[in-house]
Length: 334
Image (cartoon, rainbow, N blue to C red):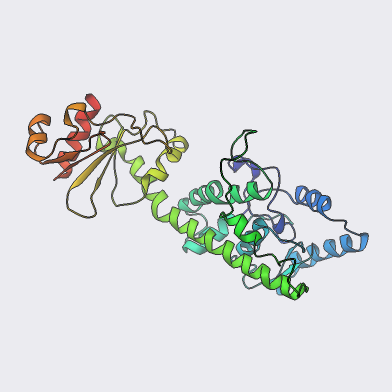
C-alpha cells in the first residue's frame, strides 16, 4: 500500500536510506537517499551501473528475494529498515545484499504483525503512532537532528539509545577479522536488535494507545462536560493522552481520569497533569478534601464511600465507580 508523503506527520527530508533499493518505508524518495549516499561515498561509474541493475532486477523478479543497502559502517536506520522489509510478504526471508522503486511498506508490516487487514482503521492509526514515536526519532538521531532547538550543550551524554547500541555493533577497529562476511554477521545482529525494539513499540501502542483513544471517544457519555474519561482497563494512559488530545482536537481537555485500582476493588480519580513532563495538575481535587480519608472525607465531600485524597490533590479514591465519578464531577465545579 502506497502512503503519500503529505499524509505523514512532519516528515524529514531524508529517507530511511537502507530501503532505497528495495523500497521506502515511510514516504521519502529514493532520489534524496541517493544524494545522501553520493555525499558519503565515491561511487564509480561501474558501481553506479551495478546498483541500477540491481534495483531493476530486484523489483522485477521476486524469486531473487534480495534487499539492498549500502555497505561499510552501518547505522540504526538501515538496520531497522532491512528488518522491516523482511517482515513483508514480498521480502519475507530475503537475503540482505550490502552494496548500494520507491514503495511504502509501513501499513503492510503493521497489518501483518498484528494479523489485521491492511484496510482496518487501527492499522493506519498505529502506522502514524509508530512513525511518530519510533521511526521519526531513529531517522533524526542518525542524521544528527537535535531533539531540542538549542545551541546549549547537553547536560549529560546519552549513549544508551537504540542508535548508539546499534552503532556499537560495528566491527571494532582492533578486530582482526574485517571481512565482508564478518561485517554482514554484525549487521544481522543490528537488524535483530532494531527489529525487536520496533515490534515492542508496535505492540505497546496496540495494547495501550488504542485503548486510550477509544476511551477518549466515549468521554461525552461519561459526563456532558467531556472533561472526564473512564478507562475500561488498566494501561499507561499518561503517555498517550496529550498526543491523542491534539490529534483528536479535543477541547476542553480531559481534567480527570477514572480507573479501577488493580490491587483492590476501589476506584481512582486522577487529575491530569498540565503537560507530560510536569507533576502539577490542571485542576487538582478540592483543597478541603486533601489529606482526608474515609469517613471524614466522605463527610466533608458529601459523597459516600470515599477512601482518600492525596495531600497534593492529584489523586483520590472511592469504593465505587459512582462515588469516584461524583468526586470528579464535584471537583470540576469547585
